[in-house]
Length: 103
Image (tube, rainbow, N blue to C red):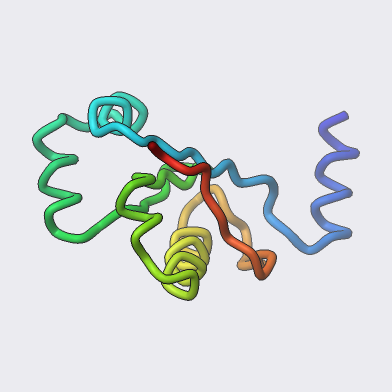
Protein backbone atom coordinates (compact mmCIF):
# COMPACT_ATOMS: atom_id res chain seq x y z
CA UNK A 1 0.00 0.00 0.00
CA UNK A 2 2.78 2.45 0.87
CA UNK A 3 4.41 1.80 -2.50
CA UNK A 4 1.11 2.50 -4.30
CA UNK A 5 0.64 5.77 -2.37
CA UNK A 6 4.20 6.80 -3.17
CA UNK A 7 3.70 5.98 -6.87
CA UNK A 8 0.46 7.99 -6.90
CA UNK A 9 2.16 11.04 -5.37
CA UNK A 10 5.00 10.77 -7.88
CA UNK A 11 2.57 10.45 -10.77
CA UNK A 12 0.57 13.46 -9.60
CA UNK A 13 3.67 15.48 -8.84
CA UNK A 14 2.66 16.29 -5.30
CA UNK A 15 4.03 15.76 -1.82
CA UNK A 16 0.85 14.37 -0.30
CA UNK A 17 -2.30 15.41 1.45
CA UNK A 18 -2.52 18.49 3.61
CA UNK A 19 -5.10 18.89 6.35
CA UNK A 20 -6.66 22.30 6.95
CA UNK A 21 -7.66 22.54 10.61
CA UNK A 22 -9.96 25.43 11.61
CA UNK A 23 -10.63 26.47 15.18
CA UNK A 24 -13.19 29.09 16.17
CA UNK A 25 -12.07 29.43 19.78
CA UNK A 26 -8.70 30.56 21.12
CA UNK A 27 -8.60 27.77 23.73
CA UNK A 28 -9.27 25.13 21.05
CA UNK A 29 -6.65 26.67 18.76
CA UNK A 30 -4.07 26.65 21.55
CA UNK A 31 -4.81 23.01 22.39
CA UNK A 32 -4.67 21.93 18.73
CA UNK A 33 -1.37 23.70 18.06
CA UNK A 34 0.34 22.92 21.35
CA UNK A 35 0.75 26.59 22.29
CA UNK A 36 -0.47 28.55 25.29
CA UNK A 37 -3.64 30.64 25.22
CA UNK A 38 -1.48 33.72 25.87
CA UNK A 39 0.69 32.92 22.83
CA UNK A 40 -2.40 32.52 20.66
CA UNK A 41 -3.87 35.80 21.90
CA UNK A 42 -0.62 37.56 20.99
CA UNK A 43 -0.59 35.75 17.65
CA UNK A 44 -4.12 37.01 16.89
CA UNK A 45 -3.35 40.51 18.20
CA UNK A 46 -0.37 40.64 15.84
CA UNK A 47 -2.73 39.92 12.93
CA UNK A 48 -1.62 36.35 12.31
CA UNK A 49 -4.22 33.66 11.65
CA UNK A 50 -2.51 30.77 9.84
CA UNK A 51 0.50 28.51 10.25
CA UNK A 52 1.63 25.03 9.35
CA UNK A 53 2.90 22.20 11.53
CA UNK A 54 3.96 19.12 9.59
CA UNK A 55 1.27 18.60 6.99
CA UNK A 56 -1.51 20.45 8.84
CA UNK A 57 -2.39 24.08 8.17
CA UNK A 58 -3.98 25.63 11.26
CA UNK A 59 -6.36 28.56 10.78
CA UNK A 60 -7.92 30.74 13.45
CA UNK A 61 -11.37 31.01 11.88
CA UNK A 62 -12.63 34.38 13.16
CA UNK A 63 -9.50 36.21 11.95
CA UNK A 64 -9.33 34.21 8.71
CA UNK A 65 -12.93 34.98 7.80
CA UNK A 66 -12.37 38.75 8.18
CA UNK A 67 -9.80 38.68 5.39
CA UNK A 68 -10.65 39.27 1.72
CA UNK A 69 -10.76 36.06 -0.33
CA UNK A 70 -7.50 36.95 -2.10
CA UNK A 71 -5.70 37.24 1.26
CA UNK A 72 -7.22 33.94 2.44
CA UNK A 73 -5.94 32.19 -0.68
CA UNK A 74 -2.53 33.81 -0.36
CA UNK A 75 -2.26 32.80 3.31
CA UNK A 76 -3.19 29.17 2.65
CA UNK A 77 -0.83 28.99 -0.32
CA UNK A 78 1.97 30.60 1.71
CA UNK A 79 1.57 28.10 4.55
CA UNK A 80 1.31 25.22 2.08
CA UNK A 81 4.47 26.22 0.26
CA UNK A 82 6.49 27.00 3.41
CA UNK A 83 9.66 24.92 3.39
CA UNK A 84 9.04 21.87 5.53
CA UNK A 85 10.50 18.41 5.76
CA UNK A 86 6.97 17.12 5.11
CA UNK A 87 7.03 18.43 1.52
CA UNK A 88 9.40 17.12 -1.07
CA UNK A 89 8.59 19.77 -3.68
CA UNK A 90 6.08 22.60 -4.14
CA UNK A 91 2.69 21.98 -5.69
CA UNK A 92 -0.25 24.10 -6.78
CA UNK A 93 -3.32 24.43 -4.58
CA UNK A 94 -6.81 24.63 -6.03
CA UNK A 95 -7.99 28.16 -6.73
CA UNK A 96 -10.56 28.10 -3.92
CA UNK A 97 -9.48 28.35 -0.27
CA UNK A 98 -12.36 28.34 2.18
CA UNK A 99 -13.18 27.76 5.83
CA UNK A 100 -16.01 26.58 8.05
CA UNK A 101 -17.97 29.59 9.35
CA UNK A 102 -17.43 30.36 13.03
CA UNK A 103 -20.34 31.72 14.96
